[in-house]
Image (cartoon, rainbow, N blue to C red; front, side, top):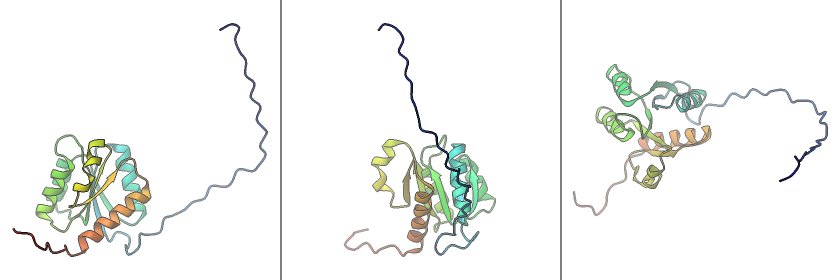
Length: 166
């Protein structure tokens, strides 16, 4: 209350030269040759889809993208056979779990990374034995790490279920 207050902030002058921009091209992921592994990316948020695509392509993956599950299924019907499905869990229409189940019905060897920023899905993250769960927000490194883990899980033989009655 009362008369206006004036603040004066003094900062020292900086005369250091601005560093030149550095261009870094990421090396391919260990054991992955460029375009050797194909990815079907299904994400309804354009900005997230662009980040994921750019990251995966930078690491040598061949990426096909769809903005919803129904579009992804049409791509699969046209003959696209991905090594890896990266899908959002919560999308309009069909969700990521149903999409993954339908993809694996036709292509059982498809690895899956589920991504979601929907908090209740985090509580169920341990229920993703059929894929790898990656919560949003994530870094490009997190994405690559999860993609490689999903592909390794797909390649590893499933452990025998000892002592279980079927």
